[in-house]
Amino acid sequence: MKDVFTSGDIKAMDAHEIALHNNELELIRRAGSLVAQAICSHASRRRAVFFCGSGNNGADGVAAAATLAELGWETRVYAVRLGQGEAISRLYTQYRMKSGREVLPLPSNDGIPPYDVVVDALLGTGARFGLEGDYLRAARIINRLGESGRVVAVDLPTGVSADTGRAHENAVRADLTVCLSGFKPGVILYPGAEYAGEVLAYQVIPSPLLPSRRRYLFTRSDVHSLKRSRNTHKGDYGRLAILGGSMEMPGAALLSADAALRSGAGTVTLLSDPETARVYAHRVREAMVRPVAAPQDMPALLQGKTALVMGPGLGDGPRVYELVAEGLSAGMPTLIDADGLNALARGGPEILLSASGPLVLTPHPKELSRLLDTELRTVVEDPLAAVEEAANRFRCTVLLKGAVTLIAGAESTLFSNRGCAGMAKGGSGDVLSGVIGGFLAHGAEPQYAAAAGAYLAGVAGEAAMARYGSTAMTPYHTVECLHKAYLPYES
Image (cartoon, rainbow, N blue to C red; front, top):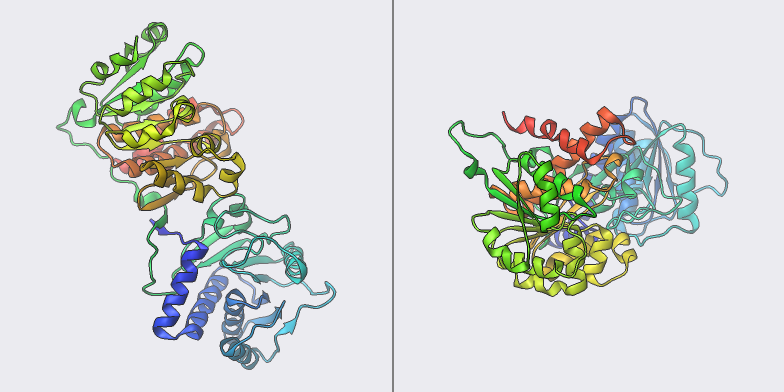
């Protein structure tokens, strides 16, 4: 997993390091060297123009320009505002000595000629959201020069929020972003990810002060082996129950069941109202079907099961909340999605605190806003804060669905950025619930099950889009391609 740090984390890390070692200038030079290294590895021509602000981000840019000048590059540095203090003054002197040029103020007219590399070092992680004045003008100049040159952003593109990914309409559009001290949420979350381009992350501080809540980007190497022993049987891989389906939405539970079976669950049992169960009995091949006539039937039906998924296509009938409440008392790993979450929002999500087994909630932004009793806008504008608030409030793993999936647990938050536009269709969440349910059934820890499930379902979705295209692909095509996601982990 790769570290992700918020603006608050970075501020605390830098302050601690400088207080401990009194090495601000050394840190800036180290950062500048890493930026220069990244530029050299991504550019064949050796002409670069830097746009620098007055803070640490601008100082990193000046240090990078000095390093490139020493390597024989033709460089030019424009400062929107000259920085103050001994460290930045020494950097200006160093740049002048190595390049033979002064740091220039931003010109009043937009007459800067094209360069091969255009470096955005205007504003760093600590900047408030928004652009105005000379910073807005500089961002526009960078975007104009980017039409013919390659734009490199230091830490994150100017105009993008470090923590939320929100982007100003004139935010810098980078081809490459060089993150210093780990990834920032804003270059992973959308729309910020679209402005960041390719992202490289380096650690400037050798042994940083780590935050109490860790955040990571979940990657390919974080998925555990799926290889099975030859001497094994279905009971070794768990018994999953799925409470879902209704006459109005019969397909949701079927998608979930199929995804769970293809995700390794030893057995899958569909629990539905009697009428829907009769329909399923004629349509389902590999899964078992059991009718649920009343909420009090749940304990007997869950006997011997190792995990439970509640919600896909369950409907909004008067007994849904009671059914969910019975499931919460079953004492097994439980995932709640869709109509299960809506029932909790109506009847009172506080019941989650009485669950006798570990929980995974998988809301989309609207469902999460209902659970938190807040506006949808609050979740959309700061999804990281919202998902972490929910995990803390309900004391469970919460997976927030979106173009980037966020998975918050008790002590950490994981980001998964796999998936595709073709998955933006009804039913994709049901597939995800089945994949995660399959992992829960055979004993995976809840946060890992959620993160690995989101990652692998995303990879399968990408494979489906490659075959069918984003317009024509369906959630079933994602299920159909799950094997392509799993095979690399079975050898």
